[in-house]
Image: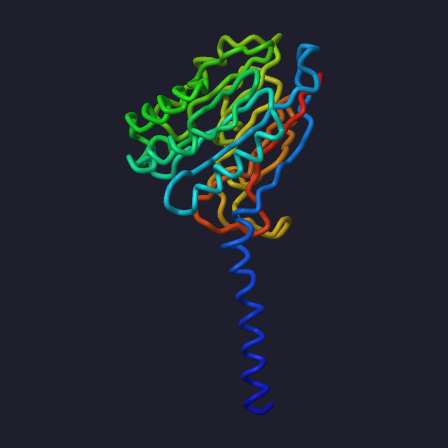
Length: 279
């Protein structure tokens, strides 16, 4: 191999090697996917069959990526005209004053359900080491000021659909027993729980139905069936998508719309659009 051929090969290899890095940094993090699925709910009122429930999770407003992407995504999501919208936690990244101010800008464009909009907090919404109560309170106030109903270890029924919301597993306020001791199994229940690891705790009181989670971001970078190197859960089965817990509970883990870091590979950001059906 002469010098000219050698340099040409080096250049070709550099280009080939640079493409995946560029793709995972500048393309996939902003390549939003709307995942459409049916959600069969026990005891669902007949008039709610066919209604749309949209799940948006893990905005992570901060400096690690351009959060104007969130506003653009919200505009696209509004075209689905959802009947219910649920936000399943981690609205900010660190929870400092600048991020909370930026969150207000983002939520001015929030997707709202025609019949109801609900939210729970995630671990990042509790600030440093997940222990800053004032940060969580500030974020809750912001969301409520935009007309979003916050669920903090409690429940709220809307047009025959009962939403049960847990505080985050890693937060000081995690106390699902408060609501699960008295939940009504005869209602059409859906549980919002940011961290799917909570599914493995003895807190469910015989609950059978859907649990909507986020937190994992699907790992952000993975080769399905081969490796998911970074996953912030103890149970490594909890990556993304629909999981049958084999006891009457069904778990859905949203891949997140925002990012802990601006890098994704084979894990596109997601907004989930469920069509409610009678189980």
